[in-house]
Length: 337
Image (cartoon, rainbow, N blue to C red; front, side, top):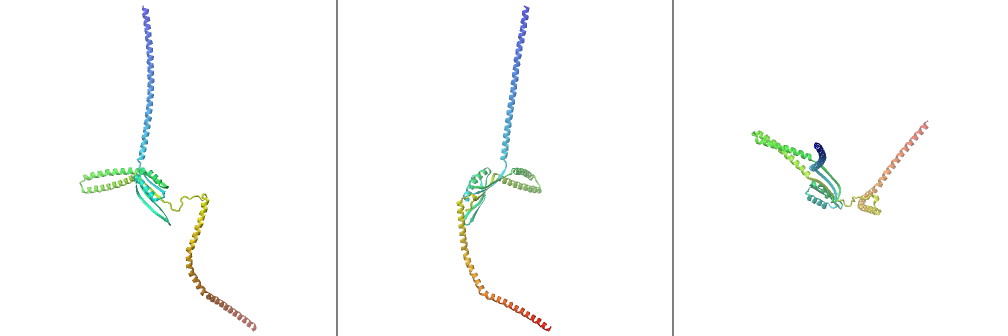
């Protein structure tokens, strides 16, 4: 009986020990699983953190680009352009361009028109200066280009953002100074001090008005771009695009030569017809002068020739007489001897 009790006690002890071991293994497995889940959870947290961080970086980059674009759009830019356009009709094209500028909210600040003449040929040239809103500047250029052939197109820009910022800062300082001077003026009791403050306040107010006018001018130039459009009609009879000589048609070259010969011959005949009356007018005094010289010139020439011959003969006689006297003297000397 006692042995059975001991065996049962040992068996119960072993059974309890086995159950405890199974429970520990189960707990360990659960712990390992929890640890694994915790590791996965931590990894998920890291992935979520990485995703969140990337999204934040992307948002920050997007915001930075938006700020840069906004800053670029806020830059104060003055645009000034010039276009030279050949048109078929100055008045029509000018009116069309001015109408388009007014539709865009712009206006004409200056214009000029000139009529050219070359014989019977006439053509017009001139310019018009447009002021259009800056956001409509490119559209206005395209509208002008559609009215004719664009010969020259140029645009210059000037950034005046720093000037506007400087003007605003100076205006703010001057306004604060003006407010302080007004306070001092209200509190002053001495007449001399009142006059001094009033003079200084007047100077500050004048400087403020000058800077405000300068600021308004810059803002106006920024808000409205300037476009100078020069319109030129082609001169009649002048070919703007010349064909290379070797590329011309043989028939065209031959006919051109025939026309040149005709023009030369006609010009020669016209010149002769124009000179003929003058030749007749000049021939009368020339013939009269010749008649006068022909009637009086022969005797005079004869006299001159006779005188010359007589003078020559007398000279010859004198020389002969001298020679004879010399010979006579020589003979007399010989006879004496």
